[in-house]
Image (cartoon, rainbow, N blue to C red; front, side, top):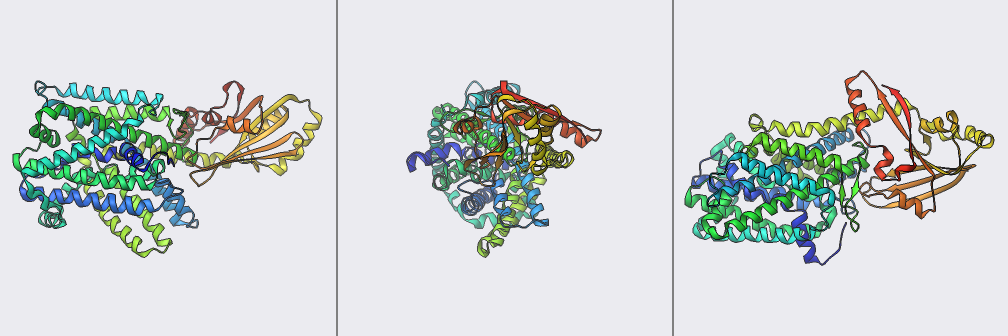
Length: 604
């Protein structure tokens, strides 16, 4: 957790790092809801009340209060909830169900991460049509502008964002101030909208419309996009600045929504509501506000991309995902990472979504399924945790949230004919990869039959005494120092390659997010040593640096590579995943000229 800076500066930073997604929701939420209902005063009061109390219930209660009370050394997110549950659950049906929920939660988070940049950037770019002289700008032109901004954002990732990240917070602070200011000015024209702060209007709206209100709820959920990211990003800044930041953001959002509601009541205009309101209130400020909105959507997208890198990195460290090459983009912050494979797959998916849906209204009509699914899973996991911790009040509240989140999830199912199936597709791709990788790793480990070190050592001592040795030190990467990978025997006993010093290197990832320690076990046999690195699952491990600290100067690095051969479609897919994944040692950026892979052919 990064605790640098004054309390005020950390709150400002949270505006840029954490609140970008939910902060740009006012651009498209009201317009999306008004696709389903007429802008009567009764309906406007109802939807404004629904938005206000949805923000309070889901963000304030579920994430800010309940979820953020559950952390592991300040770290949050779905994987952290699983870690907490693993510490209280015994192996069985419940533990297995939690593991499945975690996998689905990660997949939904990734699916949400594809749609968020698309809808945010597209909705901001569409504001160009309200600039005098640009009213007739074609849809294709807007699509290419949005695609150009998205492409530029993803190409920028490899260079890192630490040079410009200092500006994210202040820009978002100006954005929230602008939302609140224009909201207040608009409310002055129709102050009666303040009555919509009462939850009575939300209940009356639901009772009046019955099951039809579920369709409206499927659009209301757009106001809380980014809620899961608040919790997942807690490790970057800590709970306190996020909580205090929400005290600023929540009123700004509510004022913006109320202001937009007042504008609709006064003008009956339901298209591109936020931008139309700004243009109506102050035409001179419209272009600066449009530029600010594009900057805000880029920052929101950047936060989601950074969160995606973090969740994938955690998945790799906890062996839920295959290893991918990780690059460090900041010399000061190790948490600033870049994963090329994830970056380019995300860009491809974002571009497909932009050109498939073509307008933010079309995208809004399909958005929300992944968001609501993530909400339900988080609430379920929290309820189980509070049950085992014997906190009945919080457990009952979590159960109530499961019901509320479940209603939102059911409401978004109505969007499937309008394109919400894309949420399933986008989430299904990482889920299939995760499940295939986990099953494949389990089968592979069962087939390779690791050699117990007690059986290995007698034969090793014999050849070490009798065979000539290569000068220098060789490293052998192993998953477990007590049960050695078969490739070790292949190098020593079949190929008869033996160095003066042979070090078995094991990297153990703990269930804790932070902490790195090393241990060196010298001479378990002549010329054979063990070097163990223990690291938290969010830590970026500098293996080369840790070796240097122990004065280990390796001449060669060996690691095992499995060539999977199979006629089974599932194992064929696993074989493809293994082939395109970089070797394990490349994940830790060791000197390539020293690395030698030992291939083992495995028929599955």
